[in-house]
Length: 330
Ligand code: SF4
Image 1 (tube, protein in one colour):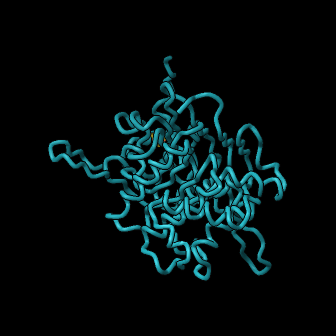
Image 2 (tube, rainbow, N blue to C red):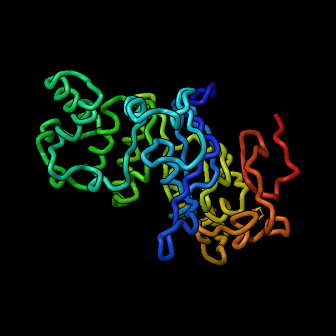
């Protein structure tokens, strides 16, 4: 991973979904699924994004690819603002920006053979003749660990793990630079998860890929990520290197998430931080810090002032008033 110009820069990204109500179906509010999120991803880096269900991590992944249109904010890919691109320009850029979905079965057309599913992205981007596309399909199947003879089969003829291998092959076949991996192992049996994670890790190294790896489970992203961002109620609350996040989590929410990760060494057991209360609704987030109604360290200022997301230690960002006096030391 080289820290030069970022491959991707997300600035003040917002995605609000309107809530309609009343007799006339007027807009009466918004679900603030992604609420002012900024981060950068560097070439050949794996950025993990974690948080509980409904925190906005998957919506962030889809909005930055414009699979759903952002409400506000900018997304720069290789220095170009993709939010300003026409649909035709965006279609061309998608060759470099792919996605792997959580549920491989739902994302693969059950009526198409694997050859058609994997050949489609090549056809869309005008790559090769029919024979060349067939060859590329066979090659990519072998790369993801499936026999090339399986090209004539249909999705239902594969296991869950094999289907996710096809989902990975579909993203990889156009040789993208960036892949958003949206909970790619969450729907799989635990025994299969590590096989798919190992495959994704090998492919990232072999092909020099950049991943945004979205998961609700910190133990999944730990294995594969160089840096990790933690989201809560539509906001990024902490972002740091993998090592710093696990050894020195700053935000109380990250500390509680980490305390719930099982520790294999019985001598290293830690005290579990159990959070009080429920996650508030993203349509009506609390004033001040969105975490204040559950935070064991809540102070008066937290109830009224939104903490700024800023670098408080070197390359370690958080949004928490506990660190208002801290500055990064180079
Ligand atoms: Fe807790 Fe306050 Fe920090 Fe929010 S800003 S996480 S309420 S200490």
